Image (cartoon, rainbow, N blue to C red; front, side, top):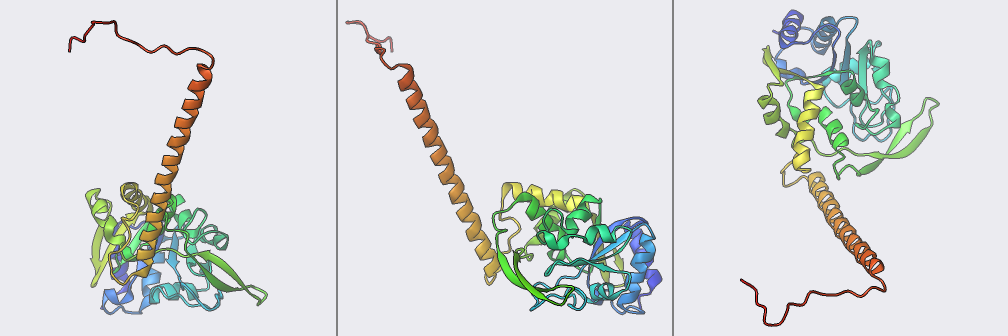
Length: 300
C-alpha cells in the first residue's frame, strides 16, 4: 500500500521543490494500490510544492461534441480529473487541450489559452516553459509529454496546419463552432529519450511500483529542437496504421518540394538579373575576345 508520505518522500528525492511550477503526466494504476486514491497523490504534490508552487495537469478531451469548461471531463487519467474537479483549480478554456492549474501562477498560466493554438506561443504549456517549469512523469513516458508539442511549434514543423471543427459552450450557454489547430501524433515522442539521457537531464526514482521521472521543460525543448534541426520528421511514429503521421510526412515532403522549387526559381532570377546587368554595362561597347597570336602554342 502506497501512502501519502511515500509519495511525498519520493517526490522530494526526485528533486521536486517548494515553489516549483510543474506539469504532471500521470498514471494512477502505475503506483499499485494507493491509500486514498488519486486525491492523495494530488495532496502530496501540493504539499511538496507549497504555497509558492504551481501544479499543472493536462485536462485534455481532444474532440468533444461540445466543450463545456465546467463539465467536459478530462480523458488524461484519474489524477487529472481529480485536479479538474477541485474547487481551487483553474481550468483553461482551450476546447481540446485545456489544463487545470492550482497555485501561485494558476491564473497567469491558464488565461487566454482559448485565444491561441493548443501548444503555440501564449498557450498554457508555453507559459510553463517561460516560468522555468518542470515536467513530471508518474508512470508515463514521453508519449504523454505535451511539452514536446510546444517544441514542434517553436521549430515550426511543416505538419502543423491540420485543423478540426469543435463546438464550445459559452458562459451564456450559447454553442459556437470554430476551426482550431490539431496537434500531431505523440507515439514517436520517445525519440527524445536518448538525447535527454546523454545530457543527464532526467532524474528518476520509484514510488511504490511507479517509475517517476523529473526533468526541466527547457531540457525537453532543447532536445526537441536539436532533433528537428536535422530531421523534421524525427518525432513522427513508424506505426503502419498511423494515418496522422503518414499525412504529416506527406505535408513535410510537399513543403520540402516547394522549398527546392523556390530555391531553383530564386537562382534563375538571380542569373537573369546578372545577365541583364552585364548586358546593360557593356551596351554599345565592343567586346574583344582574346585571340592567341599565330604560331603560338600553349606550353601545356
